[in-house]
Image (cartoon, rainbow, N blue to C red; front, side, top):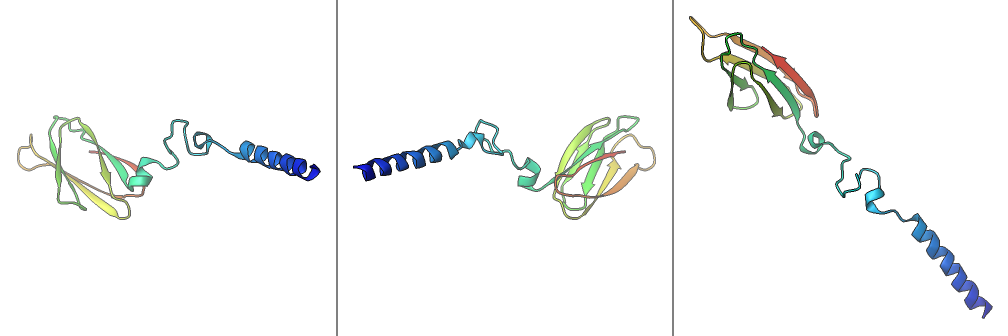
Length: 125
């Protein structure tokens, strides 16, 4: 009888320790108590850097943006600010060519950025 009582008491102690040592997932590090894991930022998960470009054209003239790592071109209106996501790991040349408002030839601006993962860059022309 003493052995059964001792075994039962020992089992009860072990069970209490295991219940106290458990943590709910919502209390674990990296969770914000609503079940969403926020240990990695979006740029880390999707692997990109961001460049914000501001067209500071005095005459509100639109420009064409060309990125060296893609064949896609973008139009940015005068006095506009746009964000673009780019793949990290290499240098990216950006060329802005005036589309309207010039007399003899368009204004052209160039820059080169080394895009890093989660990097935020700003270029104004």
